[in-house]
Structure formats: C-alpha cells, structure tokens
Amino acid sequence: MSNTCNRSVNCPTCQKPTPWSNASEFRPFCSERCKLIDFGEWATEKHSIPGQPVYPVDDDVDEPLQ
Image (cartoon, rainbow, N blue to C red; front, top):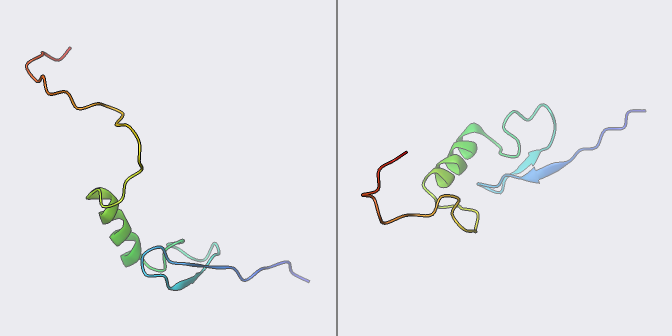
C-alpha cells in the first residue's frame, strides 16, 4: 500500500485549486503566468513586508561615498 496523499492548495494569484506535488512545476502557483503576475506585484511593490527599511533614506546626498 502506498502512503500518498492527494493534497491541493489554492493558487495565490487566481485561487484555482492546484495539486501539491513534485510534479507541479510552478507550485504553489497553478501556472507560469500566475507565478509571473505575483513576481510583478512584488517588483512594483504592490506587495511588501512591513518593517523599517534596511537602508534608511538619507536626504543629504552631498556627502561623498566612501
């Protein structure tokens, strides 16, 4: 008897049920399209992780770099 479990998750982009297995190339996304949509949202800062910036913005740009 095999010990396999048919798990599925909802795609974070379109909410379509997607199998969770090694065969799912784009998991947790249902497709490359949904994966790229999510990447674009992070790249344009539509999604972000709250917190203080790692490098604070400094208005004094006249200071030479070292």
